[in-house]
Each structure stands twice: as structure tokens, then as C-alpha cells.
Image (tube, rainbow, N blue to C red; front, side, top):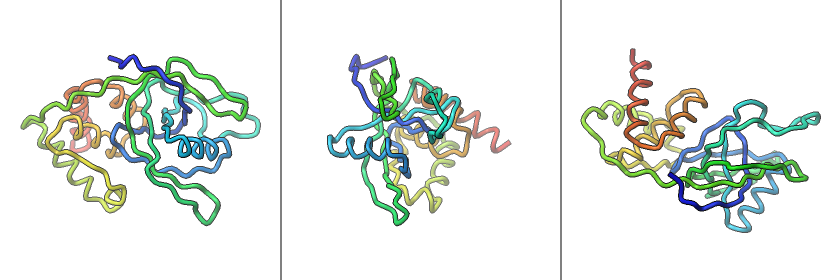
Amino acid sequence: MTTDETVEIPLFPLRSVLFPGGVLPLRIFEPRYVDMVSRCMREEMGFGVVLIREGAEARLENDVQQPDVFHIGTEAEIVDFNQADNGLLGIVTRGRRKFMVLESYETSDHLLMGRVEFLAEEAAGELLPEHDTLISVLKELTQHPLVQRLNIEVDFTEARSVSLRLAELLPIEPEIKQALLQLRWPRERLAELSRIVGKFQG
């Protein structure tokens, strides 16, 4: 399901997955991304975070092509920023809407731009007694000092919130997180998370 809203946004290929409602701190050092962040803040617009399938985050001198990326990503809104002593720009982003990349191109300064279609927001969904274990795992993860510093918001009564935050916080491979992101229904994601958590506990 899509919203039929098609827009053009800058894309930021990363080896990280951003989920709707999630928090992702980033350190920006490449000129193309410093310029992108400045433009996004000036024009109060977001950019798209997409997972790299193959390739590197930073562009090397002899790189002639963009990394290969997955076509489902999440719009990132900049909610905080700071200039570090070493000259790096630190930003904190929050995930907004999921999108599908319809086509992409590279600008003259090597920024990846995408024409994207936003996907419809997932239904909130209800939690069942069978999800109690997942809720307990999520509550435990949110107590970790590093997680608490992110000020993540969780609605422990909503299937969508629990499934997205657990997928975000579990220490699993980015490709697994991407597969969880691409699921359209919280109930599906919770079922997959139950299998993943079961392997951890087994």
C-alpha cells in the first residue's frame, strides 16, 4: 500500500536501518552530506536512510559508482545537531515515513537523489498474551544506559510500536533489520521477532 505521494529527496546510504519512530545519531564528515544536512535544516525537509546492500558508506577517491542499496527506506527528520571539537557534525535523526525508491540518480557533487513514494502508515494493532515475552525483552533493552540516552519513545500497548522498537534495538544483522522493516503488518513483524528472540534464548 502506498500513499500515492511521490517526492524527490536526498538519499543517505548507510550500513544501518532506521525505523519509523526510531532514533539514529549520525556523525557527518563528507562535504556532500554536510551540504545535504545544511539544506535539510534550512528548508525544514527530511532525507532518506537506505541500507547498503553492497558497497561502502564513505566515498573513496577511486570510487566511480554509488553503493547498491535496498529500495525500501525511512525518511529521517533532523531533531538535534552539534559541532564536535574535531570538526565533525553530529546530528540526531528520528524516523518518519517508510518509502519505496522508484528511481535514483547522482548529482554533480556525488549526492544520491531518489524519487520516492511514501508507504501508508501501518495500523497500530493490538498485542496478545503470546507477545508478553517480546514486551519483556523490549523493556529490558530500554533500561540499557546507551539506549536510555537516545530518549526512545515506546507505547507498550501497541503492536506497531513494540514491533518497530524491538526490531530497532535487537543486536541483529542490518539485513535482518531490513527484512523486518519491509514487513507491512505489526503482527507479521512480531511473529518474526518471536522466532529471532527464540533463537537467542535457545
